[in-house]
Length: 140
Length: 109
Image (cartoon, rainbow over all chains, first blue to last red):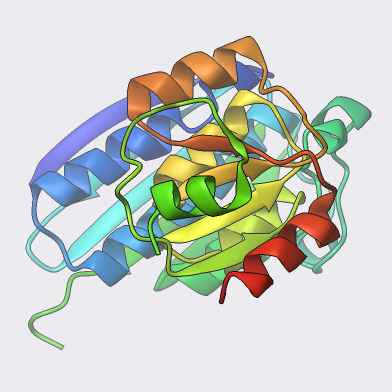
């Protein structure tokens, strides 16, 4: 079992992509299938940006065993009031700052779901937990 | 066609003289970063008018061949530094997005 934890700070746009780059580097070093690396990179970048834009900060856990990579994004609020709306393409609560940089298209969660094999999203005022699973090829 | 070929044929300014022998497979235009993340493909030249550091993060994650900024836009300083560090070529076109794309279409893309 490989395990790693990263942290993400609120509104830290300058560091955006740092966690996903580190995870991508890790996946590459493990010689994973290029398609899995691509999907992990996209999903992690979107999730990382979500934590930066919307939360008060959070952590990312990377876990890997022989069959699966599990990546968990855990933040400390304010949470997503309506998960169904949040999953609707084009729906976004990103602020003007985020929008001026080209974020907040309301496609992030949709992209994440599309690129992951397992997708679990729970949220309360205390925070949001997004758990993503990526199946490792070879035994499927 | 390589990035160097594009520079030679268009005369567009090259800001990062690294990896210019990379082959460009096709071209992608987009300024909405989630859209670019979702739809761009590796080895593409990415035409955009976003100039901040996240453009470079996305170019690196997506393994784009290069970034092409339009309208003579300058990248932000931290974007420039980050591109230099990661070896991601940035070209600057004096034209707008459509006209820049048209030039590339005429080159055979």
